[in-house]
View 1 (cartoon, rainbow, N blue to C red):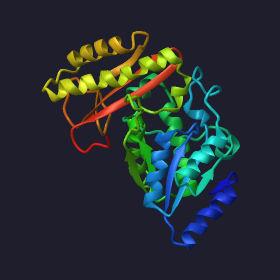
View 2 (view 1 turned 45 degrees about the vertical axis):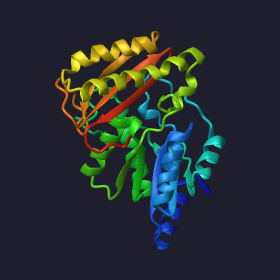
View 3 (view 1 turned 45 degrees about the horizontal axis):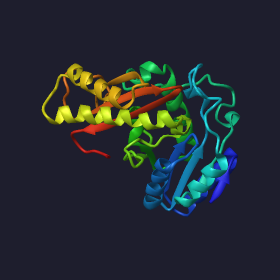
View 4 (view 1 turned 180 degrees about the vertical axis):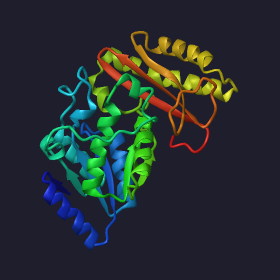
Length: 286
């Protein structure tokens, strides 16, 4: 497995892949890898002879009061996990490589990112879309792999890929969960023992929402009351950022639930923000 830090070397690696007629799968990450990332890398490795992983903590997707300085930096462990799951190249750029003249040029996807995480984290999706565009332009992958856990992000990037005519396939892979159902996340390591025990409450609340939809209930406000009650049972110390239903493609909120849709939520436990979702109706990655 090659580790590349220089953009010139990266471009040479990509040209070598073309000469050898080897397709490239790409897994963009911010590091602090876990088995959820491992599943994305393994899926890419099963689809392509070359799998590239990027490790870059992107400063432009963090708000002024968010956890950029505290975000875990685990390079050696990330390289080992990438290699063990089939990566053939890992790209580790610096901030000046990705933003040589500062952050003055942006890619912003309108509509899909307006609500939910987009409302609670202004500018977040703009930062994500911008850095992923740069990475796509540098690597020119044949496929890119993302997790269903970040459902709204995947929808934003899928729209961006379509609108900007990137010649790649977006592959959205199932959420990888711990034994109790908690969605794997780099931020789970922030949780103390008590918070970790309560964190499953978000998934239980989403399961409650899915249960009511499957029974035929369509009033999202009524279902949200039941979801909040379930969350309070499992995670009494949590603070709700949002719970609700969204169209699976546009991520517009649904007052009247109509499938296919996503039941989604974000909570805070202490200083840790957790998100999760369940797809209802239509093809599912779960």
